[in-house]
Image 1 (tube, rainbow, N blue to C red):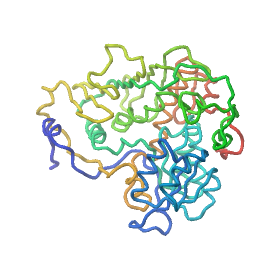
Image 2 (tube, rainbow, N blue to C red):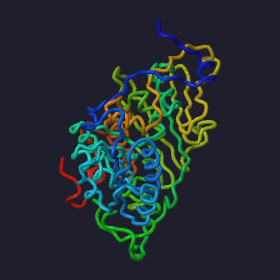
Image 3 (cartoon, rainbow, N blue to C red):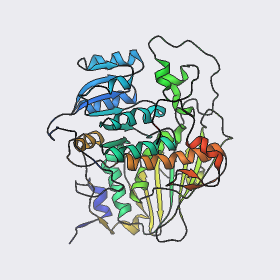
Image 4 (cartoon, one colour):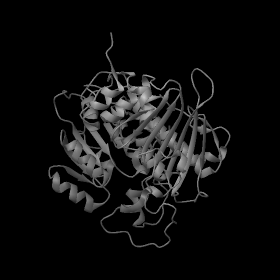
Length: 434
């Protein structure tokens, strides 16, 4: 008989490790000729900021043999810590090297697809920061390439590997709330320069920066320090604002736990959309069809200054409330106590024992899978679908009308003009056509 635990026991002790099955698996292969006990030879593209954190984490267990950054100052700083690694400004030159097993991609969102697709088509395993891409089209392209090539992939939503997130997923998968009616997500973060204007001055490009390589597939525009190394996330074309920055973290648990993949309807509200800059606040509403039929499941996202007093989750600034027929589950993305409410209804309830794997961390899970030991749970199949969902909300906000969403087709059925936002214009030669 399966052992179960009560809410009280769950809150008193950390969950133990276990075995389980994750949704949306993609084919995975071990690096050619690599033993499960050997180290991967890893190339890192984007070596500072978020890239520096990823570099440090992967370097704890694997060999860093190549570093790539379009900013020579940042590249030099990383090379001081890894003097044996070859240095590149252009990721395409780095990928010509035959000794690479895997690549870590930590560039701004708009170049994720260019680097990752190029690496995967060369048989390299890929770890790429979240969100997977800056457009729905690129996220789909990355997921399709991963499935076609069979390499091991991982989207870098690092909390995905944490014990507290996986416990939330286990509770949702076990149906402790009964039929779920609504998911409310809140993020109070406001990115710097949100709601601002496009810079109009054109300072010279610093000598240490290759601006053309930084732009990658994005149509040309003048350099400005707002973009690099500053606030690129708030400018459409490079990033997608606060929602894309945090959505892959905060909506991860309910999407995984409730197996939410493609919404059927997306609508968004906020200040009048700016042509170039993301807003300070936004509300995005999704509807998901149920396999069993009936009213759709609703997911509502509030960010920045948008959360009205009645919808703020008590005690949680960046988290989720899942509302079901038996009660509510409140989860703080950054950790802390996960609550099942009302307490009196769950204090003596039988809850599922831990069932999902508990990897050491997100990076180790990926590296071990690259060596043929285990699998990744936030691969590009899962991470691509999560990113597409979030970016569909960005498209709905920018186009200014609700979208009847065709998830498998990655399009808005009722809004042809959304097409240029789903697949924005790009410079030729950076990515092959699908």
